[in-house]
Image (cartoon, rainbow, N blue to C red; front, side, top):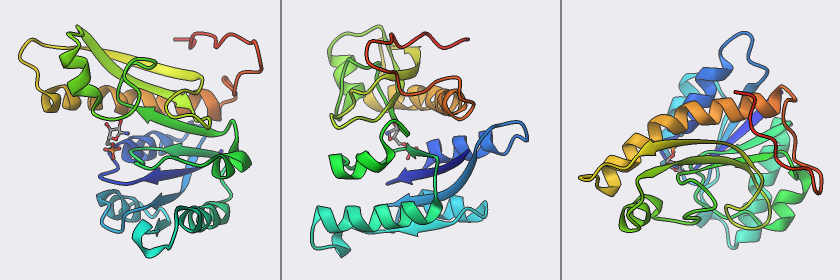
Length: 203
Ligand code: GRF
């Protein structure tokens, strides 16, 4: 399966996916990395692996719609079967999602449905959570609310700060995203039909 990855920053999740895809028996290959920030560190890391990259700086476009059109054009040139959002810090419009409906994944640094949105680690600490973690889900028009594919939990320690918790969650993100991508690329999981309960992953 052809996978395009959208990033905005360091791209550590993109790298984890690229490393997983490098395994000969992994049913996916990364065919492009697209960023909405020219300065995204992930672009150089992708290029170093010979992956085509596209830097489409939001501020170079007059509107969100024009920026999305440029991203969609770059995406179309990759002819992806699956789109992975990995640290992509922009909400996608319904028009953007439609052509790829059911084939866009996102990783979010909380155990959804808890803590959708931003500052998830500080919010988990402030709420007195004893566990935190990450969620890979199918992307739908709402924010951080599509069907869940995979999750991983980590302990919240009494002396944790948002930074120390973020680092601990990031380590399990790098294991969970490749698992979730394998589930979809192998055909083991697809966007659930209406009413179909999202079955637990076969692990
Ligand atoms: C990660 O916490 C991810 O969950 C969130 O963005 C952060 C940075 O991701 N979406 P990356 O290092 O750019 O992959």
